[in-house]
Amino acid sequence: MDITAWLTAFAPILTLLVLLLFLRWGGDEAAVASLLVALLGGAFVFGAAADHLAVAAAKGMWTSVSIIYVIFPALLIYELSAAAGAFSVIRRGMQSFTPDAVLQVIAIGWIFADFLQGITGFGVPVVVCAPLLIGMGVKPVTAVVISLFGQAWGNTFGTLGLAWDGLAGQAAFAAGEEEATLLWSSNLLVFLNVATGFSIVYLAGGMKGLVRNVPLVFILSVLQGIGQTAVALFSPMLSNFIVATVSMGLIFFIGKLPMYRAPQPLHDAEEVKETAEDASGGAQSGMTLGGAFLPYIILVILAVGILMNDAAKEALGALKFSLAFPEKVTAAGFVAKGSDAYAPLTVLLHSGTFLLTSAVIGYLRYVQKGYLKSSAMSGIVSKALQKTLPAGIAVIGLIAMSKVMDDTGQTMVLARGAADLAASGYPLLSPFIGLLGTFMTGSNLSSNILFAGFQQQVAGMLGISKVQLLAAQTAGGATGSILSPAKVLLGTTAAGVLGSEGLVLRKVMPLALGVSAVYGVIVYLSYAMGG
Image 1: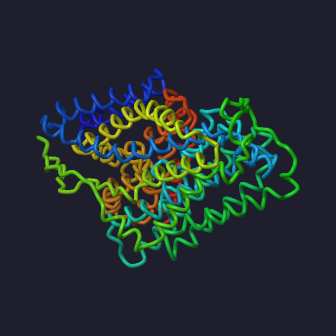
Image 2: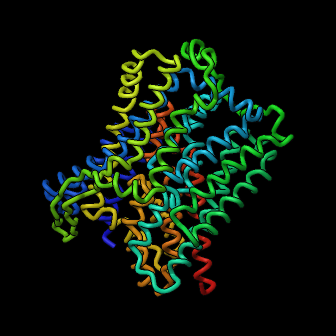
Image 3: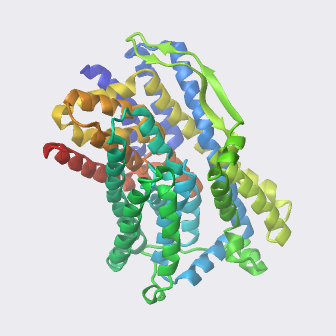
């Protein structure tokens, strides 16, 4: 292993972590600084020419468009709901569902977040659920952490199985290996489900709430974990969505049980202050709970109705935008493949379009019902744009850094260095490769595309089955979604605490790293016992 190359490749990630975690820089500043480090390393150590680096950075900027297209309409829905006084109605409606505030958080931050992950993904659960939790009295940073936890376990079989498809597309499965990998992947994700479930309950209710809800977390985790595994054997695409839908129904049944009809306060709650919009709109003008949730209901109807309809998907999927990029080669011989249609943006099937349509329909309905004045839209758009701009800069910097590292060979050097260092102990580290991929790209799908072939290659070098390593790859990638800076930025932006990314990372990192370590031990022991 070339230690100079490995340290150079690690430098952008180390820079990002130090700036966010210890120096407490904002996400936009840290992202730009880390991009600069990646560019310098790519040029002076990995031998990438200036045009090579420019192409890589341009790829990152283009990929960022897809994420920013989620941020703006999601913030538009938030500002729309706030202006109409919908959050006060949601707060009161959740209290009528159950006076147990901890169960309210479970319903939104764990169950609803995973439901959204099942059909949309791309950070939508975080930007939707964090503001809803804040409206229920959860502190903003805690709301972001809970939302990140809630969407995590659905990051392999959620988004209609996209990440799983990415893994399967990169692997050369022999007979029976795909089913075995699927079972291993879904079973590993049960540990993430349980860990995030208990963490969410603890964040919401403290130790008292945790002890009180131990049976509930186990019931939901068993349902979701075993249910996803069972359904995935028949339909990986629908497994997470079906289980999340059943969980949504179950949580409303649970809310009617006598145990959850008594008031239970949040641990370390933030006082919810009525805004001027709350006082003049929402409940005061007769808004129902369904009306308050209208933009989110429209979002679900659009996503389910279109993405579950093959004919609609084919028709709407015809409109795509993409850019062409040439092949580039570093002085060290690393090839960044060219593409005539790089990262196509399927506009009409994009989560951003679903969000934007939901915002527009919600606005028109709110105006019709008298919850908003027609002139309110300019102010709503202005507020959403003001929040989107700094987040957009940070996203561009982060994704551009990721692409520069990918296209100059830095990412692969990191992974190969870990494999060389660990040797026969590599299975212990295998989940962290998946985690690294999602940390950098913000996507388990991208992580699987980036590293599934590498995991398979290492399995061949070690003379072991690829099944467990591939499962560790995607389970680690799902866990990495908890601490991906791109998703953390989505949360802090939606929660109105942009600049708190380092604080969020400090809170989520122990769980993400701990669960990944559990995966590694399980995989290592399976090989040690002849698996």
